[in-house]
Length: 344
Image (cartoon, rainbow, N blue to C red):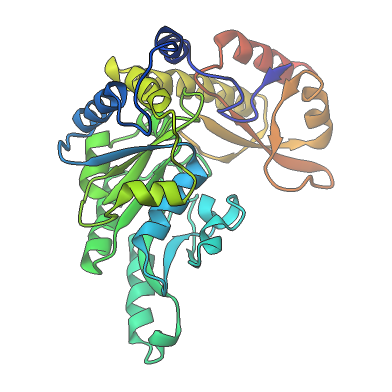
C-alpha cells in the first residue's frame, strides 16, 4: 500500500533521525535548556532574520495554537479566523475549551481578505452594544491554508496592515510552512513572515520531524511569560533536547526548504496526472495538498492499492478526495499512482 493520506504518516527524515540517534546517549538538562536547543533557536533566528525573536519548541500543532491564542487573548476576546481554518474545524474545540470563541470570516480558497477583517472590526466597535459581545482580539491564518493555497506577499502585507491598524496581533499557523515556502509561484520568504506576523510557528511534525513545532514570537510586546504558558497547556517536553536536535537538523544546512521543494514537485506531478486523465481539480493548490473530484468507482479501485482520504462525506456518485505528499514521498510512489490513474 502506498500512502498519500497526510504528511505525517511516516516517522522522521533520515537526517533528523540520524541526529537523534547520534545524540541519543548524551545527558543534557531538560525543558529546552540544553546547547542543542540553544543552537536550534539561533539557527531559526538567523533563518527568519530576527535576532531578538523568542523561540520556543512545543510538542504539537494543536498545543501550539491553543497556547499562543490563549496566551494572547484577554478573557473577553476571541480570535478571527477563516470559517475553514484549522482552529475552527479540526481542533475539536481546543480554542473554545480555553474560554475563547473562534470568530469566523468568509473564506476564499481557504484564505481571508484584509477588507473583511477590517470591516468586521469596524462594525464590531460601531455597535453600541459591543461590550456585550466577544471582541476580536487577534487574527489567525495558516500558511499554507487547509486547502493547500498560499497567501501572496501582498495579501500578507494587507492583513498585517489591518491588524496593526486595529492594534491586534497577526498569528500565522505554519504547520506546513516548508511546503508553502516552495509552493508554485510563492513570492514570500521566512523573513517576510517574521516581518509581518507578530507570532507564528514553523511546523516540524508535517515537515520531517518525529514531532514538534517551533513557536516564534517576533513581536515581544505580545505573549510574555511564554515558558509557563507552554507548560500550562501541556506542550512542554521534559526531554526538550529531542526537539532542539530535530530543528537543528532541519535548519543547519537548508534541509527544511529542501523537504518542501521535493514534496511540492511530486504533488504537482500528481495534479497534472489527474487533470490529464480528465478528472476535476477541485482546488488549484500550489503545495503538497491536492484535491480532486473522482467517481466513486474510481475511488474504490484506487483504494485497493493506494491510501488517501475523502475531503468531506462520500457523495452519491462522486466524491472529493485529498492526496498529500511529504518528505517521505518518492518518485516511485508517484509513478505507481499515475499508472493506477491511467489504468481503466
